[in-house]
Amino acid sequence: MNTIETIQSRRSVKHFDPDHRISDKERDEILSLAILSPSAFNIQHWRFVVADDAALREQLKAAAHGQEQVSDASMLVILCADLMAWQKQPARYWANAPDEVLSFMLPAIDNFYRDKEQTQRDEAMRSCGIAAQTLMLSAKTFGYDSSPMVGFDFEQVAQLIQLPDDHIITMFVAIGKGIQPASPRAGQLALNEVVIKNRFEP
Ligand SMILES: Cc1cc2nc3c(=O)[nH]c(=O)nc-3n(C[C@H](O)[C@H](O)[C@H](O)COP(=O)(O)O)c2cc1C
Image 1: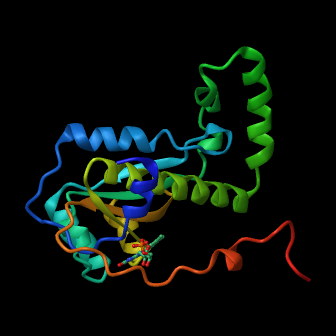
Image 2: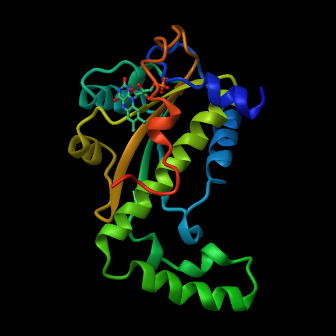
Image 3: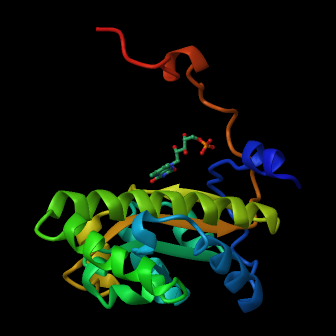
């Protein structure tokens, strides 16, 4: 499957084979592709909570209004972000870069994030959004379907996964063997509505 086919065939699938098990190898390959996603300053805010405990899955399903993808998916990722990743040994994000790059990046990162709560959250959301799409496209390449989800009680889920205070939950990504195709595409907006030439009309 080439990239175009992967993008075109990725759909939000709601029904997965509950008996299918993903191997540890495939799971790690999919996650290894997801972490190649871009992030501002290469901070890699994403933290992938892989919920494979069956009892936890049931609790998560209850927190997600009973949505079956949560329990039936072969792999459930609770995509979280570390809001304070910018100040946690940032040199490791540029460990392989030349010294002059590192000495430019460290103060730039600090200046960009320090005392800027909205920026910290915006960047975490941006990073995780991109990582989620990489995760879903990688899953598709391995023959899996997926479902991004925000239809759950964030507070309840935070408690269930013991989310650290300086982290946020961005979304779930459920991955598994689809047993029912997604509904036909609900309605894409026309390109000329969403593409703006140079600037918006006043
Ligand atoms: C961030 C996000 C959260 C979503 N949450 C849910 C959800 O909780 N439950 C659900 O059934 N679908 C959910 N969806 C799926 C959307 O309804 C779906 O992406 C949209 O209708 C377009 O369909 P497609 O993904 O098949 O192209 C979510 C999608 C995104 C991107």
